[in-house]
Image (cartoon, rainbow, N blue to C red; front, side, top):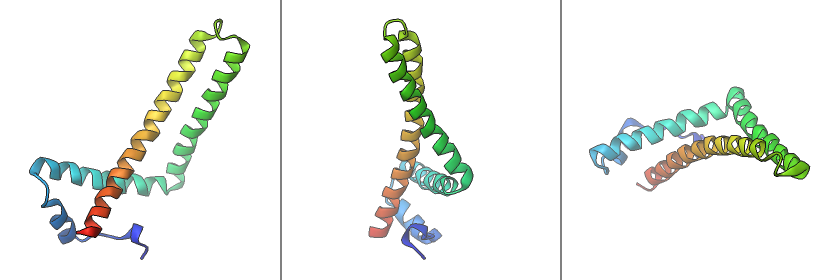
Length: 114
């Protein structure tokens, strides 16, 4: 079984989270579970479709910003601002996903070393 698909036993997880305070344990469990669920979902066609759609929207809004800027920044300032806000929302979404996955990977790496 590839290491990334490794299934941790209850004992292994319990040993790992016992190193943390009670409040930290809840966060660690949430981060591990969230990363696993998200990773599984992103490997499904539906998850790939959503992620690709968000990436496509960033590209589309970026192209819109460029087109409007070339056409006349001052007259299109409000539309450019709205498109930039949309890019920011999409970026925040992707950044949030990356953060969840990274935190889960960090915990799994720590468990391997334990």
